Amino acid sequence: MKLLHLADLHLGKTIGNYSLIEDQKYCLEQILEIIKEKNVDVIMIAGDIFDTQISSVEALTLYSDFIEEIIFKMGKIVLAISGNHDSAKRLDVNSKFYKANNYHLFGEFKDEVISLEDDYGIINFHLIPFISLNQGKILFDENIENYTDIYKKILKKRKLKDRNVLISHCYANKYAIEEENAYNLGQKPLSIGGSDAMDANLFMDFDYVALGHLHNRQFVIDPKIRYAGTFMKYSFDEVNKTKSVTLIDLTDKLEIEEIEIKALRDFRIITGKFDQIIKEESSDDYIKVILEDDMTIENPMAKLKEKFPNIVQLSYKNRGIFDLENDFSIDLSAKNSLELFEEFYKFKMNEKLNDEEEQLIKKVIS
Image 1 (tube, rainbow, N blue to C red):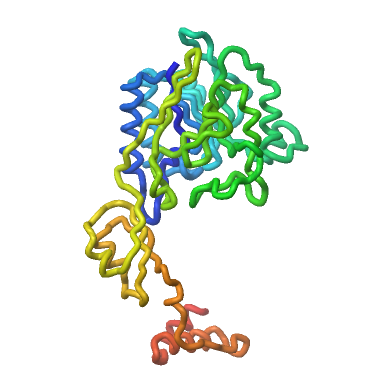
Image 2 (tube, one colour):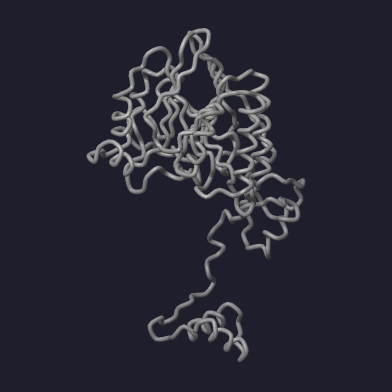
């Protein structure tokens, strides 16, 4: 049976002020072609389908069109779960209709196994959506202390006969401890103030484990326990990464293939002097600029935007150029809000507020 492992679609995501819907549509169209060309039987989506719990109409439409193409036009099976970015309850709306059309979506945890059959026998699919620690206490045991405990409770009841595939959304590693640099910039952790990690050794009895949550493609302990990663770049710490989806051929053995997905627009970091950068070839890539100038440039973002319409971020390598040349010292306790603003305005503009400006500031303060 051929399985396609997708995860962390984050449909509806933005970078800076720019929507990535067009870029995501471009990538999803490639994935549809892969499903056709490789004759994929089952598409697995390991959580974080959407970027926010209340998704935009554009994101909902994009996902709906993608799923409808797969289940209605191609006649394939989809197995999907919620991630920590998704609203589990919202995803479960219409679940009966979905199930009747070979789209098995587990928003909230269900103690069910989906069994499919091919020439080599039965494959049991175990779908475990994201479960927070608080939910774990309510569902399983109030004494649950970590994510490893949650998975121990769930898997203890599962009898692994025939071939078994797990689809889940979690942070799994060999030691169940936090690893430095595990998360990409902008990734939302599973919990606040505690450890996200769980013990991946619990997954060793499965024939394949399709994981979601970490954005870099990688395996944990064994190549069969795998993060597919995002199908496109979502942050500037991924500039040198190649993005892909994972194809699994599960017969009486396991074969894994990573298939590259091309981006509509790339993520790039440009470093250099302003006068050099402004002469570069125009690009609609998503750009982060780091200026190496020794003095601040007047309105550099607007000027660079003419060359790079999708510029996202601009910073100076030498932060010291923002140090004030003169000390600016005020006795804060001795002045009211208006007086503080007047002092600051005089310092920055080298002139006093006129009467009209003073009245305007008074109105704002009040």
